[in-house]
Image 1 (tube, rainbow, N blue to C red):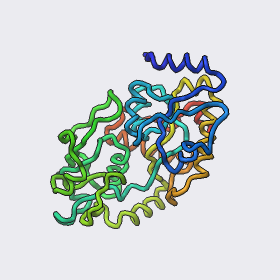
Image 2: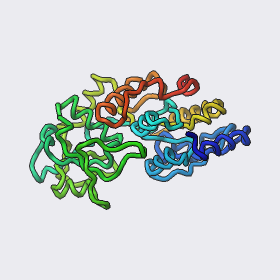
Image 3: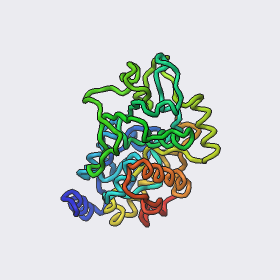
Image 4: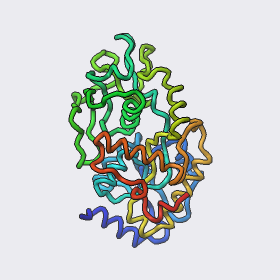
Length: 309
């Protein structure tokens, strides 16, 4: 059933055929900086970068209330959106991505542990459906033999989609908890953390030994760079103004070319360049009960966005 905001978007696009303004949830990242600071612009559309920082605080609004016409979405969030029939399509344009092995950490003050040692233990992650959690759990399972069903997952937040519920074995921590602090205090045996939440305590070590070297070896073998965020647009925009969608993609490409500080191993741009990355995200999301069915890579795109790049 179409929402009132879907219809508002449609009416607005009809009235603004020349230079419409779109509400965009896109944070200041190396790839998006030249778009955000005005070095890369469009003659076809004005982008109102009105989303919050960090951008993930706008994902619920984008998908539950159609609060934005376009913007970045965590890849897991987009997979759930597609599985639950939300009106967005993906552009083959990664905004954030990285090797993830180093994101599983523990406090060595309580003794050294390895990946298999978290079985039967409490492990924290901001949300079970968080993209970092997806990638790290998949690595722990497929590279180190961890039985994920034996881990007691402790979370702070629900998922971004109202239709989604955490699988059995997850438990919400009290409101206001800090996963990093609980790990430092020994309440959690380990934690899956992104860079902004990673504590600087010298006792914090990676659960995977020599994690950065292990990640490079995994990349060399698998050829996959885990994607965190990609760009998505409302499907009505793609249907009615494919020229604008193509121009937004052009802006992302140009802004990416001007980016400084990208890691040497970073997701490429284009559908085929990301097919293996996306397929693995789908496989692991289904395996970890984050999406209700196994999607195909091609259904994440439409005829317009699938032909980009």
